[in-house]
Image (tube, rainbow, N blue to C red; front, side, top):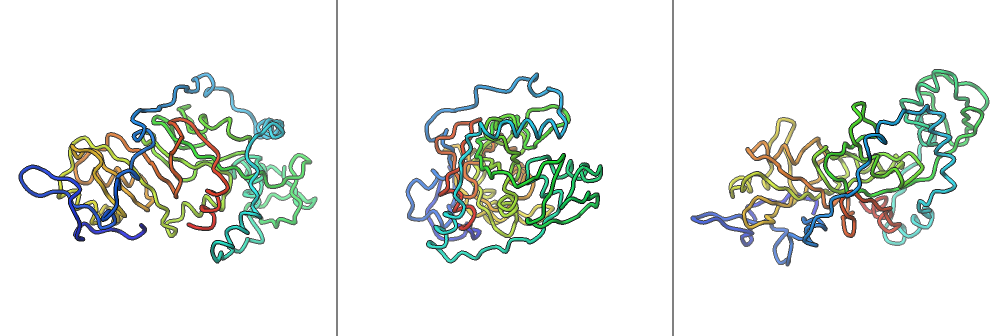
Length: 343
C-alpha cells in the first residue's frame, strides 16, 4: 500500500458510535480478516508489556570523554572479539538479480575525505574535519588539509601512520523504549539509544532517521551510509506503521479528515491506511510514508488531540516480532536484501 487511501471509497464500517454516523474503513481493508493486526505491536499481540528492565547508570553515561585516538584504538582492540554477522554482499546481489531486474546504483568514484575517515570508523565527519585541518591525515604520502578534498578507493589514506580502510558493515534493529534520545551524543548527559546498543558492535553505528524521546518502537542503526540515505530520502516512500493512543476518542469526522489528508503548515499529510484498534476509539493504527519531523503527533494535535502513546511497529518492512522493548537484534541477510534491492 503505497498510494493514499480515501475514506469515501465503498466499504463496511470499522466501528460505530451511538446515535448516528460510524467510522468507515479504507478500501484496503475490504475482504481482509484481522486487518488491524498489522498495526499492533508484538507486545500487544502477546497481551503484556516488555519494557526494558536494565537502564544504564548515570555514572556510565557521565564517564569522561576519550580522545579520538583513544576511542579508535579501543574499538580496534575489540574488533577481534566482535560477533557481528558477516554478510555475503556478493551472494546477496546474485539472489536479488535472480528475483528481479536489479538496476545497480553507480558507485561514486570519489568521496569526500572526511566521509572516508568516518567510514573507516575513526570518528564522525565533523571530528574528521578537525583531524584534516590539524594535518593528521595523509593521502598517498602527502598531508592534506583542504576541506572538501575527495579521494578514490584506490587512494591510500593514513592517520597516525595507520592505513585506513572501510570498516565492516553492521545492521542493528532496536525496539526503542521511551525517555531515550535518538542521537549519538547528548551534551546534557541524557540517556541516548547508543547506550542500548553499545554491545551490538565495535563499529560506529548511527540511527537511521529519528524517533522523538517519548516515542517507542523500531529504530534501525547502521554504519552503511548508502542504505541510510536511501531509507531517509523522501522519494523512496518508505512505509512506517504506528500504533497511536489518544487522550480522547476520535470522532468519525476527524477519522475521515486524517484518512483524506490533513493540511499542516509545512504541507499535506497523505495517509496510506488508518484503522481503529480499540472499542473506545482512542487507539488507532496509522500507516504513513512521510518522514517529516513529528508528523504523526502533529497531525492529531492539529485536530485537537494529544498523543498519549506512539509506537512504531513496522519500519521499511521490518517488524518487532520476538523483539522486546529495549532489546536489539541483527537483521538477517534476507531482510537486508529487501532493504537494499526491493524498496
